[in-house]
Image (cartoon, rainbow, N blue to C red; front, side):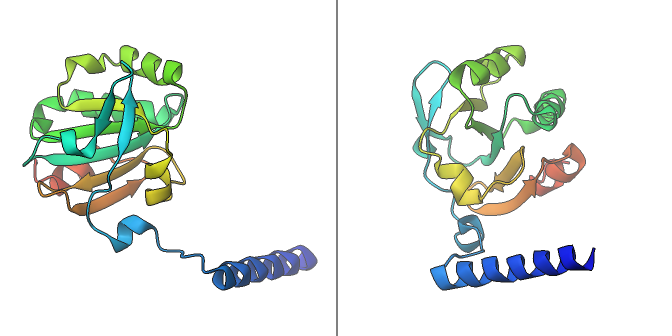
Length: 168
């Protein structure tokens, strides 16, 4: 057992050393630049949606998700349940999965019914690298000026999200 632990420690030290020598920055870009990143996602109707199309003077919540993720489905159900509290919040749901999977999720939760929700695919894989997403759903909250407020890795419970948006 001790030998396994020792090997693990040596491998960890080697990886850290290689990353440091290669100049790998361990701080995700969103923690260094508080501005909302530019993005371009393909929506389920094959049209494009960009940051420039977001309504001004509203909060924005970017949710990186996977349609087959149980936590992501829970996140959607919770938001829909409290949707009347989010009339000044834009939700941008972004995934890496295939368009048929995203479309199935879109239809299942009747997203077209919610004018403040956009859903699509990040074909350039820009957002997951900007946030360095490890788990889905990843939730990033931006204020009315497009400045970063808070991130929730693994999803946000409404009791935590509403106060950040000052909607409680």
